Length: 344
Image (cartoon, rainbow, N blue to C red; front, side, top):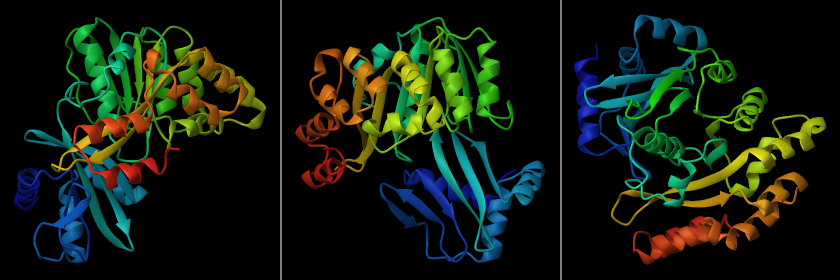
């Protein structure tokens, strides 16, 4: 059971619309609000208080795992919120970071995502990747895609996540959610099992290793729609990132599998708006003969040229997305310039 002190912290964080809570020795409780870390009050936590608050978040089994592994990630549900929690040692002190999650997935429209993404939910096979740097809303976008399928189509959806962030309740589809470490040992093992469960859609929280990537490509090429996230800084870096999973001996094989399997890539940035909210700016690549040729033959730098002229197929560049946010007066010129520095 949560301590009264933690309940108070959670309540204040909710009132302030914080997205994260930081519990750290030699600092006050900090809330992530927009891009800034804001102190909850002026009270600086001692090492013992930071440890106690962190331990109060865990049950006995989690405490044992943490003391064995020195790190732990898990989910916690309290009232109407769910929290993704990481607890770790930092210079000998114990602290924690809590991401405050929305319990129910938002829709594609609620997230103001491009309407072309709805077309990807009608696909019956292939690989759809959602890419971006850390904390750019990739998981939220993937949850919205799953929710769109769930409420419109009669499908069997299997998700493999670490940890489960959004809970999907069966609407028209049946959604089976598996958490790595609790329901399956690894992403690769969970993915292999999913292939034997007669799935229509498989969602992989993140592709972290060659084994997972290889199985995902095989699934995508044999009549299953595979959704996954990937950490990259731009779409033109995706191919190199994926190819790097395997040895150079397998490079051409991987390129041809990718060319045949990838249906779309959504790359996104989460941008603070003038009003203090956040909006997604994204660029979208849709598989065409030209993009498949680039995947097979190297030359990822040509991808951006194809996207710039691929509007008819639903492609969007980051520059176009940022320009739209500017025209809607949601972001400033300085914000736009800062983002576009990374997008030639």
